[in-house]
Image 1 (tube, rainbow, N blue to C red):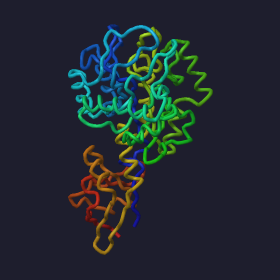
Image 2 (cartoon, rainbow, N blue to C red):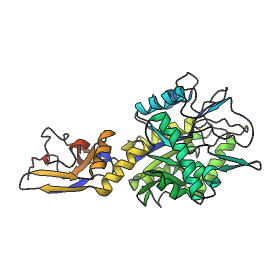
Image 3 (cartoon, rainbow, N blue to C red):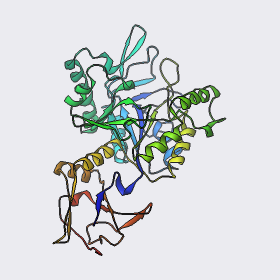
Image 4 (cartoon, helix red, strand yellow):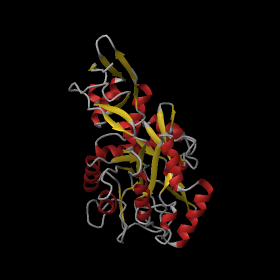
Length: 381
């Protein structure tokens, strides 16, 4: 008899996280100018995502990285509207996004500071560990005021860790984090654990266009993308490598193309929408688990700590894991999956799913609320 926990739920080939940076209580009064403040208005960010992505790919779940305070300008200029995240209308919008199955993660208090006509990313501005911890606490307090819970994870602004980044993440109770850009997807395809924190990989730039985008984007942007493809491999090649290693396909984007300095934000969902569609279409040939970053963290934590035990005498199975992990999985409605050696090995018995086939293998799902409890089995052996 052979049972094993799957790398991802339902025997998926890989997990995919769609990251959208710089969600904020900001907008410009121009097409594509919403960073989030317009909520569900017709010219808002979410309506664009709904029409251009979710209608065709309804299974996608976004992980938005929220700047909780009044975001600093990009060296010069002004926003048409800017405020902090706890204001009532915007806070209601954030809670609505969560209720739709998306995630709001932490992305700094102000994103950084302007110093001598240069923008300095937030974690690079911290001059001591105490200053770093205090600033993060202030930002997290605004998050909590808006959403009534603590963020589970986040990302360094500009992937700049500074001198005090890791300890500030650890000291403020984050469970997962995005810390750097992963040019080589083979180095840590599923991330790495450091001091109990899962540092996840960031690896797919949706502005690094595949060849099918020729003629569909400005020629200068396409030529820059060709250089990136030459240096680090094409987007599709990277995806193939990540899937072959059952890793995390982490798509990188930003909310809006507009900035206060008049430059174009790179990358952004508006300019890259055709590329995004091509990437999601390419992913559809694989069995992908589309999830939020916290869902990926929780399943990774589960696999890291869980033990499968069979009680042959009493014809029972136990999936044992820390009670706190089981409760978190249950809260987010994540089932755990077992790979079984025959389609007749486990019968439903009212507490687990029917055995199903995927890619020539057989699987069965167990709801998180049944972890640490005996599961009755019916075996054909």
